[in-house]
Length: 275
Image (tube, rainbow, N blue to C red; front, side, top):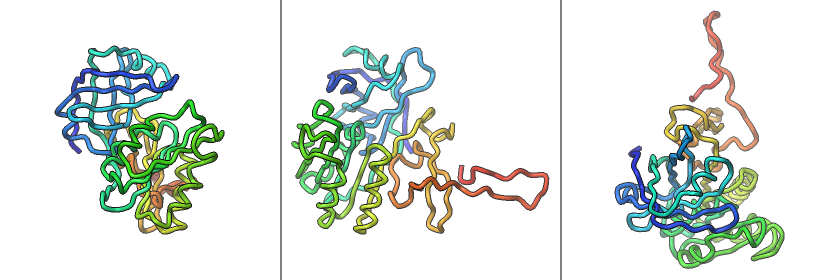
């Protein structure tokens, strides 16, 4: 994995909703090596731990980050002014497996929508995007997706905009014509998408969100249980091994790695095999 810590200039800033901000950060070197589905670790003044934010898009030599204010750190970040410098460790993680000539359905939910834009753009007219939000006031990036992909479907939980209900309904209707699925959003949504993908035998990848500290696999704080080909359940790390995983490998039902017992009496079992 090739990444670096570099300063970036905030060249544009917009507020998309009451809590969601759109930053454009100029850094030609980082923009050149950033791939769809990756993320960055943002240094926030006065905070020890960086904040992980997915890359929404790359526009020439500019990285686009769309993030939600969820706590004190992101609230401080949102106060950054155009022209000021933000330090990033980037690019981090592994993105989606993209095949631009295949019909791909991208499914996003809430703040899981921004990470899909750069990936969906790679598939262009072969991309169908289904984005779900709670209500109309929460809808973001509609114009960006409409300009970039073949078809955009919007849903809202309360029916105030687009189709009423959840993203899984239009997804199931479209699955017979899909070659693969790429999804990002809340875990319950991803779990239901994984079930549909398995039912219709469509390859599916999901981008997981997990609390991260280092972003490079050193602190082991973002462990997620996954199933190996031989049926074993082990831990992988969202920052280093993900954030994108095959949906059928994720241990959705809460399976945990089994403790490994030792034949040597004075040794304790290793309870975190795979870490």
